[in-house]
Image 1 (cartoon, each protein chain N blue to C red):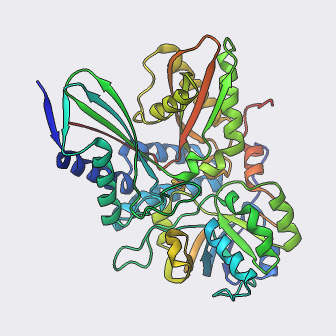
Image 2: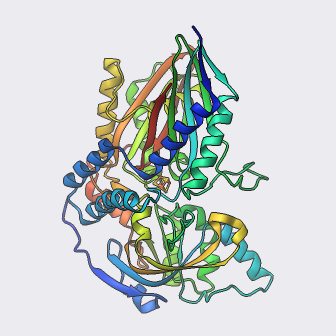
Image 3: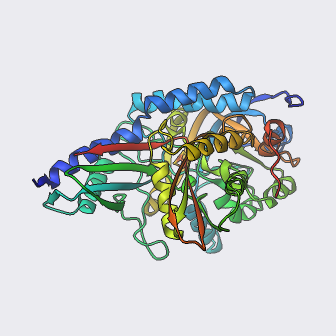
Length: 194
Length: 281
Ligand code: SF4
């Protein structure tokens, strides 16, 4: 290990602005407040179909944040079931379409394809990760949830979550920074010859 | 002497096991995470392990599933030839147990009737069943619940017979380097070597389903399990891919006789929410 980059912590509120995005660097910790929209691949396909059919989406895309997640059903008396991130790379194919229409940030888990970093630079956006498989823990930061549409998709329905101090890490920033890559650079102790 | 097991006698223990597995991690797994937390130096890796540990507490307190992806259920069954199931097949009993457990506990239903033209089955059935016959009158069922994220990084490679076992290790390291971050590491990794293509992946799955802390009984394989685990951890991928020392908790290998012209190698992983349970009748 050479040295660890100092990590900054921010408390941010949605809708995120471009100024918010510009201060963030990969590895930074963010506690997010406000609304995020749960959408998985089927949800994305539906939204695109609706936009193409000139139907209005039930929320404002401008400066919005998507949470790639399909929660488990809420037991009686609970706001929501468990709600951890799903694998983001499945949504790579849809990202540019939504960035063009104002999407500001995405939350998920795992590495994404290499073009994604260029898109984030181009549209001033960030990709956050949160801890996959810590879904019961993450549900404790949700203060309200509203079903917005596509109920027939079950776990893939479009849901608005209101979160308080939702714990995130910046995985890709808008400057090409990549937490996964720098993690490997700092921690790799083996030579992996192709 | 035949041993008769009724449909209902199968269903209710399976149902309770499925509920428990999805809500509560074994003590052994929890201890592994505590241990991992103490090994990590970077803030991001420590943060991830703290959240994983915190999750155990909240899931149990709130009776919520550890992960929203409560997976597809797999059962590896070994059935003594003196066992007689009455009132229904094993598959029917398992499906009924899944139906009841997933409905009652508000688990997510994540199974489609058909991958290309299907809809959600609505009750997380069917499960996936592998049955093998054994002698005696015991019925053993090893349940494994796995989400999509970690199943998606499974791999099969038909390698060249006679190669150095290090080549197999290299294949596994390269696959993990590309994909591990998407499968919620730290991982438990099952490797199947031999049989044919189909069987290698089955072996990998069976290896994965071994309880934590049960190494291969053969000395050579035991050494490879240890060595490969250490080298995977030197990749530096870390929990959730944020960089760190603990990427893999255990490697389990199983082998089987194979054709002289072949060397099938299968790899199947489980995420850190390792949901495995053995039942017997
Ligand atoms: S890989 Fe495992 S921990 Fe991660 S989301 Fe899937 S089931 Fe949950």
